[in-house]
Length: 419
Image (tube, rainbow, N blue to C red; front, side, top):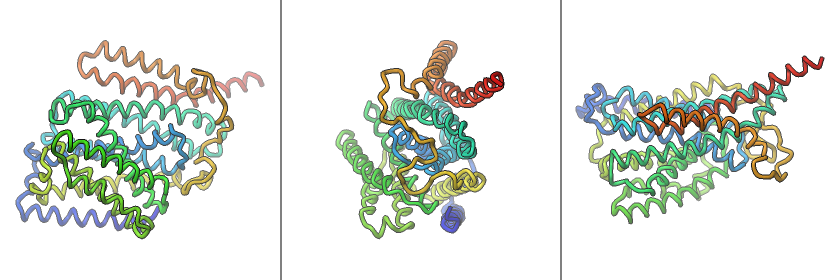
């Protein structure tokens, strides 16, 4: 980890926070920071932004694993940890400014669904940590390698479901302008884009640079540009400033001097995330210039406070768990022909008949139990029935995570009986 860069970024955020808080006393907006009056809309914008960030890391990690893209364990751990830390920031915001973030009860249930996905992300993250800590235990590594992709197969559609449900309910209950089947695709694409952008920054802090993710960012920026333009054509309005920051600025990565420079990459990522923040503000207020016309030092103070809190939590946990991230026995960093700490699959090209693949055998019983749990939850619970799907997926993930330890326990018992 590049401690120097992390320290500079954290100190910079803290200094900007102090200047913003001081400025809030100058322009009289300090009352927003000190009192939860409910009239301040900016906490709601930040809450939606950090909710998106809480899904971005685990969505990208699960997607790359499902698509069998070769990424190293360090990348997966960083992405999953960023999701968990972002969720913590969103929870802190919701407690401190509960009145400003208050939404319809149906949208609240969707937020709880995102919390359930957070628990699933925690299971996903812990399985990677256990695999890293037990590199010398070949039997445990083999068992954990069997459940990584099945876990991703459960988590990926669940994240899609939860984000889409949140987007649809928000459009239906909070802002009817965004109603339509196109809006969930729009939101999911932006969340995926946020995950790609944040991964560049996180790897830069680790002194690594993944060119494959850089190409993904550029491709996704073009796709997001089409979505932005389509929304402008369909709705007749859109955030052009958000388009400039989130879609135009990333094209600077074509310039070698920018993409090969650490601070250049971090600056591009900052512009992308700021563009997404502007889009969140536009979704909430339906005014392209609301962010700038209502700009006060309290807004900047809260924004920098959230950024500093994320950096402090993320790199604090990263430092405490450094032995998991920096285990020399696990291949990390730049791409190579070998796997990223997984047991090498010798039967990748082997054909399996339908419903007989090893991954299906791993998930079939847990998914069945999860479906039964979801049905029972929906039957006995009249309120917030839309939590049945995420809750059933969480039960499935929990049962999948228990399988390696159950298998090892039975195998050890069988050996003792044979002796």
